[in-house]
Amino acid sequence: MREKTVEQYDVVIVGGGPSGLTAAIYCGRARLKTLLIEKSLIGGLATYTNEIENYPGFPDGTGGLQLMELFHKQAKKFGVKIKLTDVKNVELEGDVKKVETFRTIYEAKAVIVAAGGRPRITRATDEERFLFDKGISFCATCDAAANTDKTVMVIGSGDAAIEEGMFLSKFAKEIIVSVIHDEGKMDCNEIARDQALANPKMTFVWNSMVDAFEGEERLERVVLKDLKTGEKKPITVDTCFEFIGYEPNTEIFVGKLNMSKRNYVITNERMETGIPGVFACGDVREKDLKQVATAVGDGAVAGVEAEKFIAETEVFRNQILQTERIGLIYVYSAIDAPSRELLPMMREVEEAYHGQVKLNVIDQYKGKSLCDRLACDVEPMTAFYTKGGEVVEISSKCDKRSVMEMLNTLVQNPIEVVI
Ligand SMILES: Cc1cc2nc3c(=O)[nH]c(=O)nc-3n(C[C@H](O)[C@H](O)[C@H](O)COP(=O)(O)OP(=O)(O)OC[C@H]3O[C@@H](n4cnc5c(N)ncnc54)[C@H](O)[C@@H]3O)c2cc1C
Picture (spheres, rainbow, N blue to C red):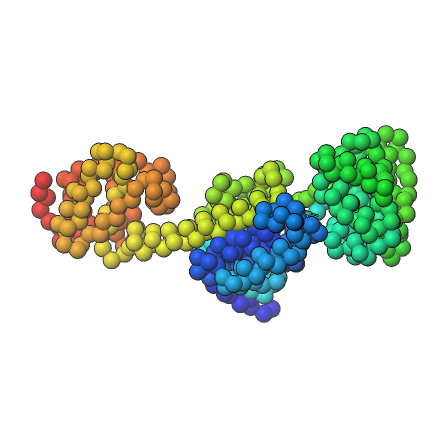
């Protein structure tokens, strides 16, 4: 079998929806060598919607596709490379992360998971036979025109179902909405509900769920089951639109990232996943509000944090754990007077060794992530001694004598300890 090619990047972003594109804009603008990988449509789920009315900056609303084209253009402007292919596997531990596609292994210093979600399906009998282009659709924008003057069914009563159902009513002659709740009860907001109930093209089948999909080559009937009586009723339709929620695209991350019960990725506010250098943003995260605006916010944070992570890794490797000299790393706290007062003494000690010792000072709060890399929960007034880029001693004895005695065991030419 042909060997996969290997390419190196600073950051690889998995997923090209609003969150991935925003992360890409931030990384590209920070001059990181950035690759974004998208398996289907650049713009992700946002391209499914005909009209986005709640994204700030567009008082008259905007089309999902148009908005995503702008995001895409902006990412390209900042030099982001985009590949249209499916990420098959990832190796996220360690300094060099690997993101694998059919032909290539992309190595990266940081990875941003922006894989979003996909529409949930009903799992009713024979659903698989008609998915996507054979009569079951998840995208009103894509398939509304093809249903001009036809009869369509909408499954679901949430905001997406009802809003997309109303959009479909501009094209189709009849929209039959299957709702699992009692008459008049819907999951969408009240304004959408009232508009839908008043829409003459929309009819509702209350207390119902899909039992089966029927047809020859293409979908012809949806069999709805009455949840109260158990009665099954086949309804002839041209297309069935399913809007019953989403599930995350996290299969390739299972067992590799910390996930919620519903398989969404758990992150903190900095979009960190728990694996250093791996971030997650947008709908793929366990969070309450899944919208373009929140995906964009997440993407911005992930992009900035990835950039910070890479910069700090370089400082840590090349400066803090430098290999040329014996290292003295002093962790202090700017708000802790005793630890702060030792700073001038530490500088004197460095000078006394005439180039044999390199001092690095880290403020515990400002340099928290550097402290995390050294050890967990470092107290102010801790000295780390390094040799050849390795920490050889950690000590809370930070008086001049203790520091010099320790350095004398490490340097080639020890000096007299003068207090
Ligand atoms: C019908 C509908 C209407 C909506 N209306 C609105 C609205 O009016 N306003 C609003 O703010 N939000 C709306 N939303 C929600 C909004 O679209 C999402 O919250 C937003 O798109 C999430 O962005 P994301 O980047 O996190 O994920 P997504 O948009 O889901 O993008 C993730 C991308 O990752 C890709 N991907 C996944 N796995 C891989 C892999 N292994 N390899 C490569 N690529 C991969 C996917 O193909 C996808 O393109 C709507 C959603 C839908 C479906």
